[in-house]
Image: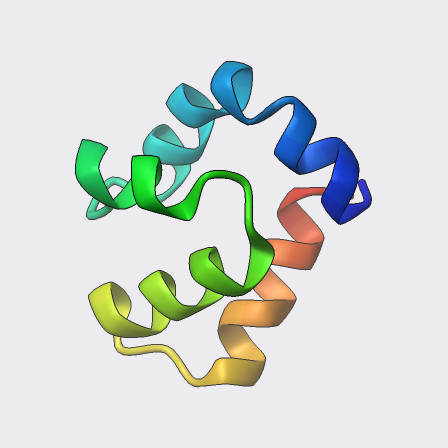
Length: 63
């Protein structure tokens, strides 16, 4: 799924994203607002993942 589609459907996807990555707070998800780079950064911060690992996980999730 491309970035524009994710951003456009973000309100519908927020719950699923929080289920997948439970450490993300409502505030985190609101601030991400469908931006891939923001999500990658929050995953790095909350889960201690490397940038590459977080990017791969996000890309796999939104395929």
